[in-house]
Amino acid sequence: MLGVSFPSEKIQTRLLRELYSEAGVDPSSVSYVELHCTGTAAGDPQEANSVAEVFCSDGRRSTPLLVGSTKSNIGHPEAAAGLASLAKVLIALQDHAIPANLHYRQPNPKCLGLLDGRLKVIKINRLVYGSLDCTKSDQTESAV
Image (tube, rainbow, N blue to C red; front, side, top):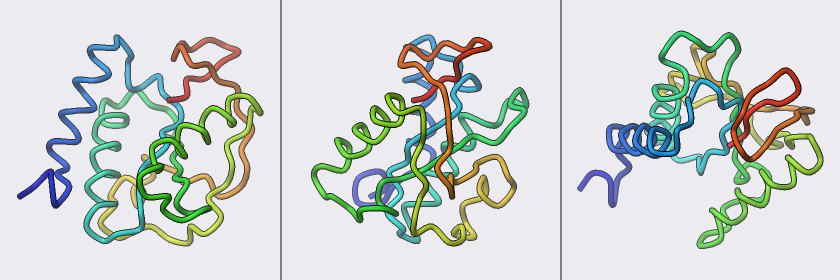
């Protein structure tokens, strides 16, 4: 059963498009996405490929979409995974720096966006200036 016991790239892509459309946010204005990626051969490509499709496929992005996951730093916090990711992004916005993914080494060969450069894993702490309202100006970058 795809989407419940096995992740579905198609369903994740549709969900992301619907979510950003309903929120009135242009995915190309987003500069960072915190992924759930757990290091699994099955789930990571489904998620990474859907993110690359939604955020990077319209040709308007001039730089790779920055991505990260708390799992590379602290492991999988199970039921608190979403909360850990949200806390990471909030702290990053507060400190104006996205933490590096400490244990990331190389992309899964099925994560096409990582291989072709549409997505870029943060390997060193990266200074950013962001806002939670997802607006973009000369002084701010969107961070979701």
